[in-house]
Each structure stands twice: as structure tokens, then as C-alpha cells.
Length: 182
Image (tube, rainbow, N blue to C red; front, side, top):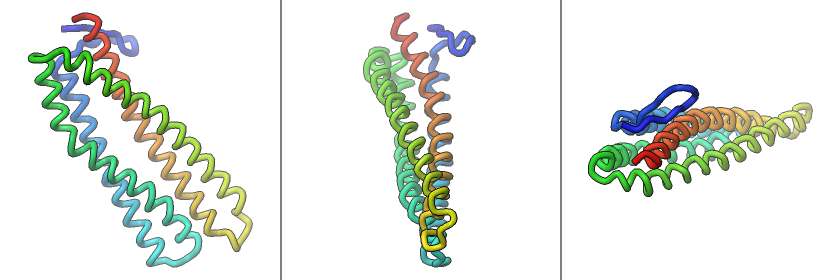
């Protein structure tokens, strides 16, 4: 067993760590996808049912980000089991796969989280700007609704991605230590 220090704790890369990572990814992706589907449903209700400019504005980010979230959640959910099985198998039968392919893939995943964080932060700020810029202009209330849901969805995505990123960083540290020790 290989050991790594993560946040002051001794950790060992094991098949259980690999299982834990991918099971957690699958569980979070299910929640992520369901939230995306709820956002899509709300967007349709807001746009076609309520027909108020603030709700119509709110519907746009709900629909766009809900589609992104639902599709990302679905993609991660459907591939998690195959990845988990492949990496657990590689642990015993093909450790080089963990050292090269999986480590490289996970480094790319963590790099993408940094990009997502910037996009989500920018979206959050853009939403706040829209809210404050148009809050007292009755003719522009559409943009207030747009800003409110853009801000809320960006915050929700940021939190979900932060949780996933922390899990990925831990998994990468285990893979890197495994790579150094074997």
C-alpha cells in the first residue's frame, strides 16, 4: 500500500479509494443532473406559464444552465461505473494505466475545474451587475430576472464544482503518490 499525506492525514491509495472516488462522482452527478432537470422545468413554467417579464428573463439562464447541468450530470453518471471498474482492475493488473492514463486524465479534470470556476465567478458577477443596473427600471425588469437566476445558478454550479474539485484533487494526490512509490 502506498501512502500520501493529504490535509495532515496519512492516506493510502487502495482499490477502496478508487471505488470511493467514482461512487461519490456518480452520486453527485445524479444530484447535479436532477437539479438541472428541475431548472429546465422551472424555465418552461416561468417562460410559458407565468409570462411576466421578470420570469421570462429568469427562464433563460435556468434553461441554458439547466441543460448544461443535466447533460453534464448524465455524462458523468453514465460513465462512472465503467471508469471505476477499469481503474480498480488496473490497480492490480495494469498499474501503469493508473500512473499514465488515469493520472493524466485527472490532471486535465482538475485543470478544467479552474476554468469552470472562472466562468462561474464571471457569471455570478454579471448576474449581480444586471440586478443592480436594472433594479429600478420597470421597462428592464426582464434583465433583473435574468440576473437573479444567473447569479443563483452560477453560485450553485460553483459550489457543486468546488466539492467535485476537492474530491478530484485528493484523488490526484493519491495517484501521484502511487506513481512515485511504484
